[in-house]
Length: 109
Image (cartoon, rainbow, N blue to C red; front, side, top):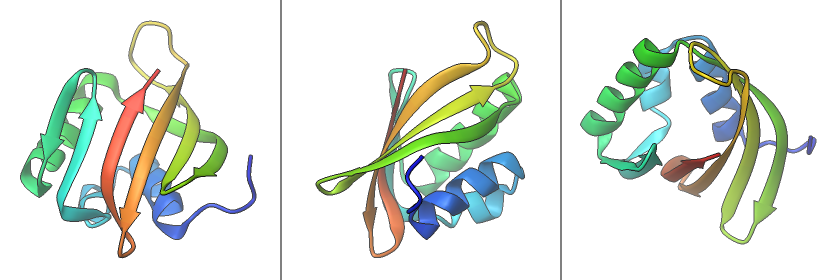
């Protein structure tokens, strides 16, 4: 894994694994959008609902495997272990940051 992980990304992983919803939500810009499982969640309220529903459904933890900077994007490859078929699974998290906040997150397998 790359030794340089932006603080916001490190906090994303930590708040995901620590189930700290308030700190997790605080990482996102007000107009941020998340794409996960074929759906878009835009704005803090929608991202909070996505976060809570996803954790209830899958009860997962995340382990970073690799981080790469690609233009304006930061790509995180992570292993997720949880309550879902095929666990553990390796997923890609494509982040864009603006002013230290997550402005875009696209999650794919």
